[in-house]
Image (cartoon, rainbow over all chains, first blue to last red; front, top):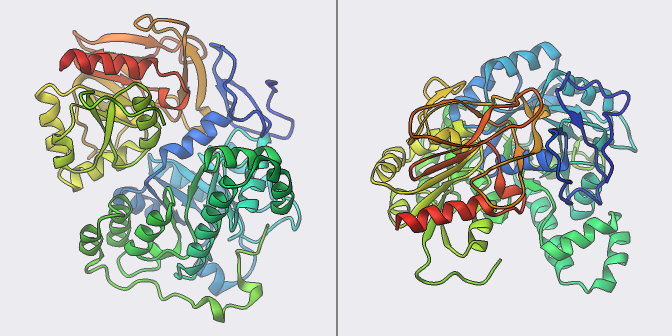
Length: 329
Length: 207
């Protein structure tokens, strides 16, 4: 295992420590004894996601929304230019937020701040790292900047979360350095059906691989288009090597609880909160339902009197070109 | 998963409002104790001791208040229940807090001032070795994630570890006050079980 300096082109914040960049294969190996503090390791990147488990991460477009999210008990906020429902409505190219807006959000709240970068747009990610965001979301909800390649996430000190629809996609993202995975779902629709499909697919794929013989794993890696070492790890441990959240179309406390019962370790809510009638109350209700996801009495209680949910879109009526989940496989 | 703990082994709860609950459970189970998740006052009443995991302390605190758990937690602590908190758990066990939300409540129990997010943002999160003379063996490999540190401690608080190098050298990151233990870092993420073993010994002594 080699300790490298932060590579060229990485304008990370003037940090105190030496960054250590690791290959996917060595990511789970303990580091050597050393009292020199090391930043940007796989363990601190993946560990950050572990600390978010059981929580709700909320999309916000400005500092006022960020405060409402923090007050409601969000474990983190996700800064983006427009919520997915508005991206669908208004069209055009969706990009990283204005740095002034991100600064304002970082200033306004004390919880972690994530921010979205376009798929493959490594310079947006460099900018977000230099602003001091706590997690970069390389997101299909924004307009992709590269039709073929994702960001080489090993080059960064800041950790990344990426969306996936199946295990092969999740392991490719982890192979590229993602430290957290979320189901893609279909953002901005208020319709949970695609998130359900992707969670069931990923968790089903994991169960299937667990049951395979050692000799089958090479071919499975080929079929999945995923690194063999990661397929092997999933086979041995029965889980992804990183935390898996759900996202994409969640609008109600019951949606969040259903995803948790399916096996998600936490929840992203995008348009579902700030496109609803009473965002503060709905945000709080989703936080409470995510905690007590296995207690229908609590979910019933928090689901009362929330006002109107976002309107929602039937996926069947959505033309292929407006489906985000197919971006960046 | 290790072999089942003996039926008379202590039952250690893990506060399961949010955070890395499973990692603490796994380490505790490998230390030969029974574990259970605590989300309600009834579940709290059933355990011999409590671990408060890493996570987002503002969320944990709010949920403890929303679901009527904060007072039972304080009562349990005052009646002598051993508690151990890592990172957010350290914040929850601080008598005084800097850098929290204005309405953020803690359980308290350790006479100390804790500074939340003291080391900086996630890009400053780090891992490093540090000496903990209270434990046998080599230095502890400590993982700090948007971690707090201890600004100051009162009489009766035993300092168990400091950051050894870098700009935060000298900062207090592990403390014990009677039956309450706290670390800024996350031993549950490294596979080194000595801090949990130390806590289990505290629990057995208290029983």
